[in-house]
Length: 474
Image (cartoon, rainbow, N blue to C red):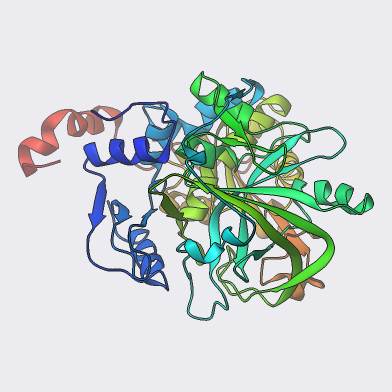
């Protein structure tokens, strides 16, 4: 019998998914050079696609690779112990103000096998290729741990690492992220920055990395807030960094303060390949792992991907938490593919405050610097904020570009959006807010308000069995 929520390891999570009929064990030989990513790409575009555990990896006997286990809102709801996937942002949002610190234990499964110095060889691990124009394999699911040298605060985030040699890797540290601020302090001291990469953590440990928390908050504390229990962590072999005790693989390294590696091209979140760039250079000091480790591949590139998908509920929850503190009448928030957001508000409030949508849009941009677009809709939109027919209807019937579009020019970018050079410089973006809420009178004098749909009584009959009785299926 599989464990239930909270899942403390990738293994217990995989067992749970298998018992739900939501995991396929792939026995055919697969090549880490693009076969895995092809499954991930297809899986994001086929309804009801399962998660995968690949058990026959070409060139890596005994290794297994898991993927797609966090793609799909139902899986994320299971991982977070939430019954209704539509309520992810509203249920998680308030928990972002809670803190349950991790508990340090003496050892754990991630310490079963240890490699140091020359034996800490990255070629032991089946890193995958994501795209045909990718120069080197990249670690896409590495949870990167870094510690502020002044305060001891540990920041946890999924970052991408290019595997550039047997004992070295590059890491793309974006200037808009907290990692960059921490690295700056190490550079000012002229010291190497310790880093630990976690591969194959439990699902909540992966998901909390996608929240946007203030400086000084360690995401391990959110793991405890979400699950109601402290996360068990162990100290690294070569630094004071803490990692989940039940992780599959931990790579310990040091990031040089001033040396750089050439990175790219790589199929990034923006849907295109990145240009070549000089990025942080890391030297591996130690690798620890389970005796029969499971590697994790996180799909990247053109949306939809698992990488985009695990970020959506966490960023939506972050915005819900923030906006509820600043505005009355916030109903729900949806984040889509990192770059755009839909915020739903109470129509009674938005109609009384014509500038509400613009104020919300400005607050979103402050919270998520790399956001491109925010749509503000009202309760007339419906409960499903992922319904793009509804979005198109709102754009057509509630939006006048001369009045309802607010553009902020040359705002903060993230270096990964291919539109940025057109704005004027890498790292710049234009940001816009679409006000799709119902307007004040006299705009609505000519129309009977209310959506043009069948009456509630008739719809209720369909939902309570008339459709099934006539059609014979749901």
